[in-house]
Structure formats: C-alpha cells, structure tokens
Image (tube, rainbow, N blue to C red; front, side):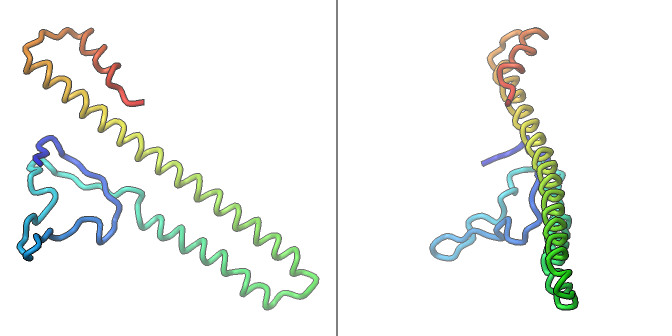
Length: 150
C-alpha cells in the first residue's frame, strides 16, 4: 500500500510497537518496514509523553506504599487519622492524574479528528479535480461541512 500523503505519525514510545521484519512461511523477508512506501513521512511525534506516564506511575506507587512506612512508627491513637489522611492524599493524586490523562486524550483525539478531516477534504478535492467539475468557494465550503468529522 502506498501512502504518499502521509507526512507525520504519532506513536506511543514502545519498543515492540513496529515489527522489525515480516517473514514468509519459508523464513524469507517479505516486508522490511511498514513505512517503506511512505516517501513523504518526515515527522514522528510521541503520544502521551510516555516518560510523564511513567513518572505518574512511580509517584502513585510511592504514595500507595508510603502508608506502610508511616504506620510502623505511628502510635495507636494516631493510626486512624493517619490512614484517613493517606487515603485522601491517594484519591487526590488519582483525581489529578485522571484529569491530566483526559487532557492528553482530548488533545490526541482532536489531532486525529483534524487529520481525518484533512484527509477527507484532500480526497474529495482530488475527486472533484479529476472529474473536471468546476468548484466555487461556496461549493467547497459545503463539501467541507458535509465531510466534517464530529
């Protein structure tokens, strides 16, 4: 499959995301890259900033495990309020990271929708030009509205 219009991709930072080679049944390399027919591919962006997600995970694990160190040196009378405060802290962090994650997902979704919309506009424009149809500014505007991804 040729993908001449593909200029930019967005991927998570994972080592096994793209296979090195695809082999046939008799161990002959059939394909050495999924992007080999994408001559205009010029940019790769990381989605979700994997280092940020890893940092969030580490902070959450530290906070969850913190209670075990604190309780061992807490007197009996103070254990209940200490556990309550710890639970509030964990819930607060979870809520914060959920909100941040939602922001990242919304941004990624918006970028994907824009890319799909742009691809559809380009595809519609190619069809109109190939068919020799005279287009006006208003007809292009109507076509954009019709193929807009919502």
